[in-house]
Length: 135
Image: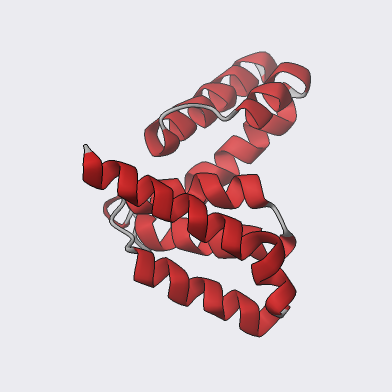
């Protein structure tokens, strides 16, 4: 029975990543490979946290992705912040909205937050937006 529960939770975690980001990120594939129970637990938590309003969530996905960008910036997780910025842009986030959120990070974490992470995320998002505009 426990194996069936684990397999079902892993499948739900994979499905959630694929639905929200288009794929399971490499870091989480590694977790899945070496610690499937941890991946399963994280996947279930992520599934609950990333519910859209029509699935019972209170916040829309764009807002949730923006929050994840800002939290990642505050802890210096630049790669994660870039991924979430791309997801948020796909959900309709604008560059001015991202910039305003990043300013909030400066208020909490200081200008070093911008220098270490925020600037890179803003540059990445601007490049993504420009590439979308050209296609």
